[in-house]
Image 1 (cartoon, rainbow, N blue to C red):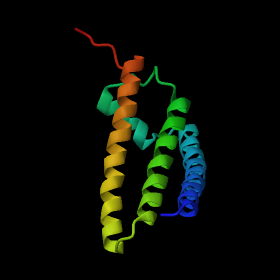
Image 2: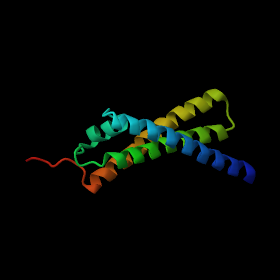
Image 3: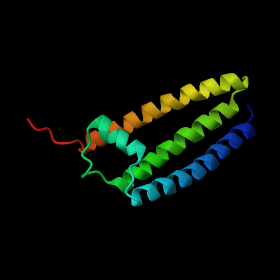
Image 4: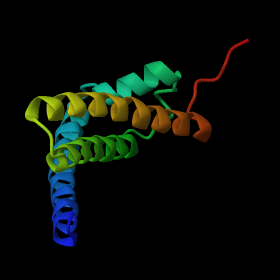
Length: 123
């Protein structure tokens, strides 16, 4: 792979990242303003037993959108670079997509727990 191809792929990743981030951010922000729940935040609250009242929702929306944009743009750029048949690209992208979703939201949820947003235990 030549330097120009690598730079092109990095450029495409950044463009995809920005476009997807902007779209998901405004979609999630409008959901938040309409008092609708956002799936990723609901998942994090339930999985990590977070205290919904203490969470900074706007900050969470920002980080969720960054994670979503990174996952989608990384998988798209990575699959675009692979010199294999389309069926294998599709399968690789599918596996990579779910692996990154699980891994990155697990890391973010553990970060929130470490910051002290978990519900107080009543014993």
